[in-house]
Image (cartoon, rainbow, N blue to C red; front, top):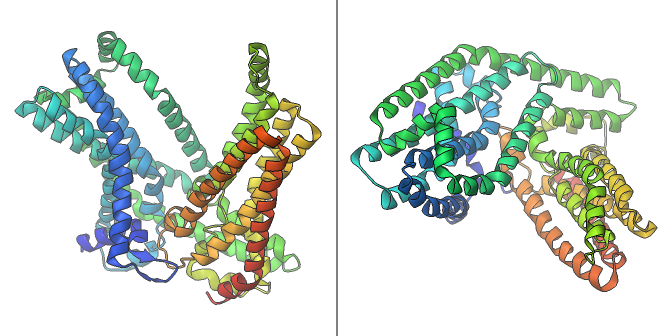
Amino acid sequence: MLKTLVLKQLMEVFRMYFYDAKKNKALSKGSTVARFILFFFLMFGLIGGTFTFLSIMICPIFFEADMGWLYFALFTVISIFMGVFGSVFTTYASLYLAKDNDLMLSLPIPISYIILSRVLNVYILGLMYSAIIILPPVIVFFFMGPVTFASVIGCIMLILQISILVLTLSCLLGWVVAKISTKLKNRSFITVFISLVFFAVYYVAIFKAQDIITGLIENIAQYGENLKDAFYPVYFVGSVGEGNWLAILVVTAIVAALFAAVWFLMRKSFLSITTSNASAGSVKKKDITKDITAASQSPFKSLFSREMSRFTSSANYMLNCGLGAVFIVILGGALLIKGPSLIDAINQSGLPIDPSAFAPVIIMVICFCLSMTDIAVPSVSLEGKSIWIVKSLPVTTWEIFKSKLAVQLVLGGVPTLFASVCAAIVLHDSITDVVFLFVTPMLFNIMYALVSLVLSIQHVNLNWTNETYPIKQGAGVMIALFGSWAFLVLITGIMILGYFFTGMILPNVIFCLISIVLGFLAYRWLRTKGTRLFNNL
C-alpha cells in the first residue's frame, strides 16, 4: 500500500515526463527518456559540474591548511539551503493542499500511510536538490583528500544527515505555513511575503558567494578559528565528513530527534489542518459563486473578481506567475534611488556614454520581468474538473477570456507604468524616448497576455490533483517563459544594433509593430478557434 502511494506522489511530481496533457495520453518511451535525459543534464551536468569544479579548486587548499571540517561545513550549509529552497515551495501544497485529500481520507487507508507517502515524496525532492550539491565535494574528497575508513563512513552519514535535515526543515516550514493558514484570511500573502524574503536572502547569498569564498581561502586559518569559536555546531557538523566518530553519533541523534518531533507534530495536526483548509476552500468557492450570481448585471466585473480571487488565494500561483511584477516594482524603486547618482558618476567620469542609452536597456529589462508574469497561462487549467461551472454561467466565452486576460494585464501593466514613470523622471530623455518608455512595454504586455491565453487553451490540463502541476510544470508555462526569453533576446539584439546605427526610434518601432502583429494574431485565434476549443472542453 505504501509503495503504491509513494509511486502515485512521484508520478504527480514527474507527470510532465510521462503524460502529454494536450493530447490527453501517455508519452512514448522515447519522449519520456529524452525528457529525463535533458533533466539530468541540467541538474547533474550543469549544477553538479559547477560544484565539482569548485570542489577540485578548493579541496587541496582546505586540507593542506588542516581545515577539512570547514570544507565539509561550507558545502553542507549550501546543500541544506538549496535542498530546502528546492522543495519547500511544494511541501505545503503536497502535504496539506493536495486536490485528492477528500478522496484519500475517505478510503480505508491509515492516515499515517498518507502522511508518510507525502513525506517520502518531499524527502526525494529534497534529496535530489541537496545531493547535487554535497555529492561532488564528497567524490572529489575521495580522490584528492586524506581518505580513511572513518571519513568514508562520515561522508556517507553526512549525506544522509543532510537529506533528513532538509526534509525536517521543509516539513516544519510547511507545517508552520499550514497552521498560519487556518488562522488568517490573507494567508497566501503571508506565504508570498515569507517566500520573497527567502528569495532575497538566496540571491544576495549567490551574488556574494564568490567574494565570500575568495576571502575565506585567502584567510582560511583566521576565519576557520573564528567560525569554530562563534558557531561550534557548524564545526561539529563539518567534522562528520572528516570521520569524527563523536560528531557522527551526536549529529545523527540530533537530526533524528528533530525529525521525530516534526513527524509527531504533522501526525497530530494533519487531519485538522487539512480539514480546515478544505472548509476554507469550500467557503471561498461558495462566496465566489454567490458574488457572480449577485452581480449578474456586470459579468466582466464578477468574472474578473473571481479570477483575481483565485490568484490571490494561492501562494504558489502568485510566486510562480506573478513574481515578475514584483521585480518591475523593485526596478522602478532602484531607478529612483540609485539612478541619479549613477548618471552623475557617468557624467563625471568623462566616458562617452549618453544616459539616454539606458532607455532601451530599461525597456528590455521591464519586458523580461513581464515575461515572468504569465498569469493567464495556467488560468484555464486551474478551472480543473469544475470548469463546467464557469461554462454554465450566462456569459459569453469572450467575457471569460477577457477576465483571464485582465488579471495579467492589470498586474503586469500597473508595475510597468510605475517603472516607466521612474525611468522618465531619472533619464530626462526626449519626448520621443519617453513615449517609447511607456508604449513599448505596454504593447508587449498586451501581446504577451494574449499569447499566454492561447497557450493556456492549447495546453490545457483539467485532470491535475495538485495545482503545482499546471502552475509550474505545464507545457504552456514552459513554452511561454522560454519562448518569451528567446524572443526578447532576439529583440534585444535588434535594439542594440539599431540604437548604434539609427538611434532609439527605429528599433522601438520594429518592436512595437511585432508586438501588435503577434497580439492581433493571438486575438483572432482566441475569438475563433480558441472559443470553439474552450467550449468543447
